[in-house]
Length: 52
Image (tube, rainbow, N blue to C red; front, side, top):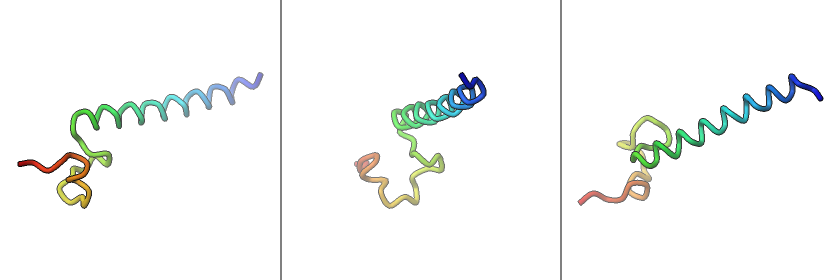
């Protein structure tokens, strides 16, 4: 076994999973995926729906 490779792969996988989970949490809270708001986004109505 090559332990350094396994450790690096585990760290990279952990970072990837954290990014995906953070994106899911932000989506459920109604935040955009880019973390900079949706005011200037052309797709904001399809993402959050039109407010009446």
